[in-house]
Structure formats: C-alpha cells, structure tokens
Length: 339
Ligand code: TRP
Image (cartoon, rainbow, N blue to C red; front, side, top):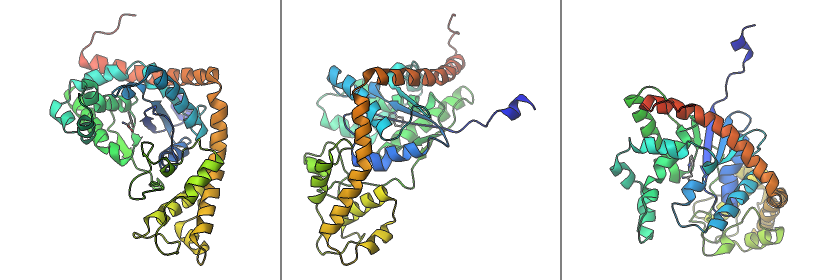
C-alpha cells in the first residue's frame, strides 16, 4: 500500500473565536457553542479566545486574565473538548498580529470606516483608537492564519467575514493562490434566543434587567425564578406565533433543551395553562444547564489544569499557524528568518 492510501483525508478546518467577556448565557449556549461542539467529530476545529480583540475597549488587566480562564472553563463545560479540538488563547499564538499587519497593508481604509460595528462602537465612545478600526483585519487574520474553510458566526459578524473573504482574494490575486476563501457557517439548528423580559430583543449579557438573561452558571433556583417570571403574551394558548413572542421564545428554548419539535410541544400543552408550560421550560433548562454548571465549577478551581490545556492548544494552533505564516512571509518577499 502506498503512503498516501494510508492517510485519512484531512478533515475540513473550522475556526471560530469569541472574546473573553465574562459569562456565557443560554442564548450563547443554545444558539452557538452547543452547535460548535457538534462539529468536533466531522471537522478539525480551532476555537480561539481572542484576548487581543478584547483590548480594543478598555479592560482591567486582572479581570481580562480572570475572564480568559473563565471563558476556557465555560467552553469546556459546554462540550468543547480539548482532546478533539484546538482550544487556544489568541495572544499565545505568534502569527495573528503578524498576519493582521500584512492584510492591513492590503485593506482600503474606507472599507474599515464603513463597517457597521465600528460605526456603532465609535458613536458610543468619546475617542476612538486605531485598534477598534483595525479589529476586523485582526479577525480576518484569525481565520486566514489557519486557512479555515468554515467559520461559524452570528449575523452580526457576517460583514467582518465578508472582509476576510475580500482580503483572502486580494492576497491570492496580488501574490499567488495561498488562502482558501472562508465560508460563513450558519447552523440550521442555531436557535435565536430572546430576552425573557422583552422578547423583541436578543438575550444579552448587557441587559440592564438581569432577570432577562439566564447564565450557564446560574443556580437551579435562579434559573427557575427567571423563567417563571418571564413575560408571556395575552391569551392562554401555548402556540408558536408572531403575536406571541414571549411564548414562542419559551417554546424555542424548550425545544432546544429537549430535542422535541415545536409542534410536538404545542400538542403536549393543549388545554394546559402558561403556569404548567413555564414549569416544564424551567425544568428542562435546569436539567440542561446543571451538568454544565457542575463541570464549570470544578474546572475553574484548577488553574494548573487550565494552563495545561492552554499550553497544548497553543502548541497545536502554533504548528499550523507557523506553516501558513512562513508561506505568506515568503510570498510577500520577506527574507527567510535566519535559523
Ligand atoms: N468578532 C467576533 C465577535 O465579536 C470574535 C472573533 C474574533 C471571531 N475573531 C474571529 C469570530 C474569527 C469568528 C472568527 O463575536
């Protein structure tokens, strides 16, 4: 048998990243992280914690460090498995900022100034640092540094991914074929979880009304309290409908937690009131998040273990990153690094 017949075909590379900003909530879990976890067997997955992106807004250093550890522990608790995937901190891998610089030299300033998220954030802050403007270029580098093919992202990141595609094409055109053009991966089962108090807006960690948001680390009591006091709609039917955004949101949550279809759930609650329905939702969320919280509490106590996981992830990510980076450097015309 020849060597190449022996080798399994390489799995397609998936990459996604998140900023280390405190606690994950039920929307992050059901709408994103749970689905990332489901990709781990079929793809080679890179999951980055982007601490370098986080400093585009002011951070308290000790909090940033704590949040980065906490983010790793939460991801693992949610099912991202360091034995299957590469979990790493952005600042641990040489290449993200190097590639961002090179891509930045291909990127028209106007394209960055037109980014919706930049305009929104710039409006909210008195003065704007160059890092905030450059944020999408660093994100493009995160993706291209691993030559990722699929990038699971939410709607709000689609414009940034479009920029990554543009920059990959530009580089390929100016130098020669180097980068795969990354595709957004929008999961079919990705649920859109809304606020428990105002179901017209997304569940969010920055909601001033904290009973709107269930965190994956909330206790069973906290979860029950928040769900039982969630807003419902007029009438008493448990139906998924446009004029019933509160009930529809709870149905989405229940369906995502139990795996039962929305219509099966509607049938189950015919003739029962909102009280019974909410109790079922609360039970399902508690059952879903209990093991997550327990795993998190164990992991977060053991920084030595988390450091080990960061180290292994950084090594795996670095080995792929160096390959791509040295190819890029050569194509750009940099003299090979003296060994
Ligand atoms: N900008 C993304 C967010 O705020 C985080 C991010 C950074 C990212 N680099 C990435 C997402 C690369 C996907 C791929 O959600």
